[in-house]
Length: 83
Image (cartoon, rainbow, N blue to C red; front, side, top):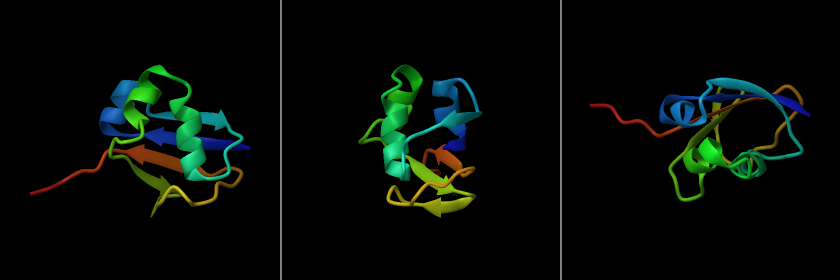
């Protein structure tokens, strides 16, 4: 299926792009994260297991068990704090 993936802040810097349209075989956000990690380089470093990464699916905060659908928009970003 074809999805749009957006990257923000330090993740965008590590990967080198803010948005990409991808073909994926993943059926959940967690499986997509693993698929992206397997690409190596910036993806592997910034999305690695053990790193704090927030996810959104179609502009709504989501967990890795959420199902992907054709045309979905997925966002990855580091947690932020304010104060």
